[in-house]
Image (tube, rainbow, N blue to C red; front, side, top):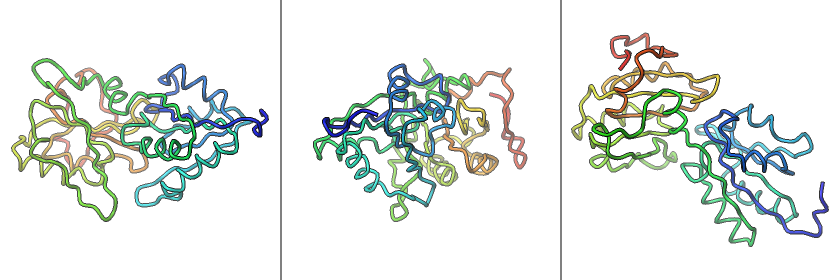
Length: 265
């Protein structure tokens, strides 16, 4: 351990990617290997945590749906306090820290306190899912655009997305954190004109040993998604690009309640 009394600390916001350790960037792996303190989220895989030095202090601030054992304001304050003590702090976040990861809030809090911050991008869950399943997020003739949205809101906020603009058949829509709300999301998109037979691919635990997939439709995904393991984070790829799901890949999970809607593209 370096002498922390003679230097200022630093916070590194690092995207840990979708879970597979070999999808980390070289820079991320180097910073993890040299970490003194690691503050990590629930979505950071055990495989990546194994790369943390035994000498490093580990602090788990992971959140569960409806239960935040360490509120976000406390996480912000923790990062500031650790850096002010002189530590080199690695903040590990699943996916990319600036995509639904609240990394920008943590960076702002550190900078407001005079703490230097660096950001290391990570492969997003959507990119990991696309690579693992063979379904591209854009494809000529099928999707000219791509949108990421979150299906999760704080308990006192309604799911108030711009449904009309999202209901674009030329756009691939990726819904993060939407297992609990996907039935409502699908119904709203259908009400705005998207066809009920538009294909949907749900991927839980993309790129990890726990990966599971459900191939469905917009009209059936609300029911089919109940087959996904609740403890594994999932996302939904909605759009015509899902028709490119390779027919020689077996689905790793099938919706027994609605097998007619779960078939290869």
